[in-house]
Image (cartoon, rainbow, N blue to C red; front, side, top):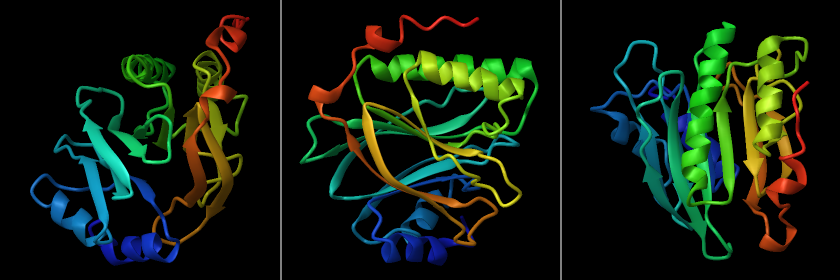
Length: 229
């Protein structure tokens, strides 16, 4: 992000974005706020996860002041990094918890299962107080390859946790679906994937808002009958 502040600012303004989720920001503790400020319009706020641990790459959220945002800290994850924000709009019935995460490309089955265990704990924690969840980020799991064990494990995880998956097309220049949008009780529309040439990953565009309470399915309608064979 350090060398792309003007490009990111242009991306937000030209597309009239209300929220931008980024991963692999490579921000540093002493300069993160300055970099994000340069990359944001004046009417935007931002939160980030920054770590000096080797191999950690960072995550951030930038959002319009049309939204009210509160950051929730989760800094103790071993297998991924994330920035968690509660977002509320005046027209919404309820807030939405956004989780923007980056998982390093470690593909051993043990590491995948550890990631899903930690991810499960995070979802469990935020679900105590919030009904609507959107998860974005680079999972480094090839979900388009259903013959792979990691893709199968993630697919099962999504079904058990009642999470819908977007998009259904490659998000990386060399192919594969790596950058995902997962939702629970959040409506998604107009999903588009575009190469904005800012990164080797594509930009995923979409509209979203919390699902009306009247449309929600109860967990027992779909979750309890799932049984892994």
